[in-house]
Every structure is written in C-alpha cells, then in structure tokens.
Image 1 (tube, rainbow, N blue to C red):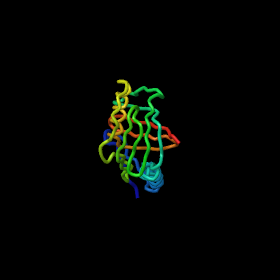
Image 2 (cartoon, rainbow, N blue to C red; image 1 turned 90 degrees about the vertical axis):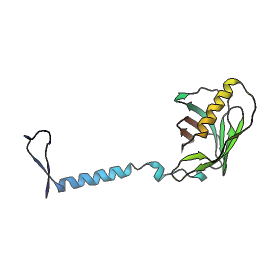
Image 3 (cartoon, one colour; image 1 turned 90 degrees about the horizontal axis):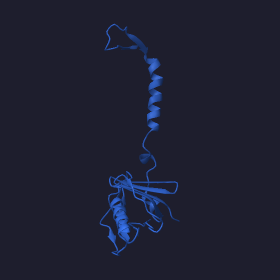
Image 4 (cartoon, rainbow, N blue to C red; image 1 turned 120 degrees about the horizontal axis):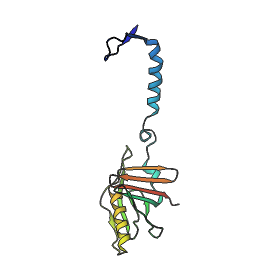
Length: 162
C-alpha cells in the first residue's frame, strides 16, 4: 500500500509515492530516539534520602538574573536533616522545614526562622537575597558534588562541604 504526498502550494508538482515499508523503519527509529529523550527527573529523581545528612557551602548566588559577588568571609551554608534544613545565611543562622515532592520539586514547608544579629549592610543585603531565593525554591538538582536550588527569584549553587 502507498501513501500519497502532494505539494499543496504548487499543483503542477507531480505526486510522489512513498512505500509504507520505507516509512516503518524511520518511524521505529524516531520512536526509539524520542523515548531516549525522556526527562531525567522521571528516570533518576532525586530522593529525600539522597539529601538527608548532606552539608553544602554556597559558591554562587544569582538574584533577579544578576550574579551577586561575595567573598569567603560570607560563609553561607546549607545542611539537610530529616525534616529541617538549616545553616548560615552569611551573618545569621536559619532553619526551616522542607519537602521534596515525587516530581523532584523542592519547597519549604513553613516559614524560615532566623537569628537576628546585626551585620554590615552589604552582608545583610546578601543574606536577604540568599533567603529570598531559598524561600522561593522550586527545583533542586544534585550532581557530582554540586547542588543547585533554582526559583523565579534566582539560583543558589552549592559545593559539597564534607
């Protein structure tokens, strides 16, 4: 059996015939290639147990599409416990409940509690941006000793802090 392909824009172009036996291997190959493109989150989802007990040091902060510079004096850290995350946000310490959904979506399960030490204005600005991105976190990815938390507010990139 044949299927007809006809040029719609130019009626003077002759009709072309293509055999189904020619199209079948192409269809099978295309199907195999598309199934290999399945999102990694559905194949290798990050599990809560992958994060519990890990400790991270911030290496990069992006807020509102701008990379926020900081030096090693600002020791922003993140630690995952069973139901809490916590650490240093630059000047103060923080903690909050967290959830990792089956689809890999990351979110906080309540407000962020922070100490209220006063620090230099530049450190406080950094800390506010850090907390804002963390509070709005939506996706989390961990690979090769790097952890990335992303949201519409920005991105936090951490290195493993064993």
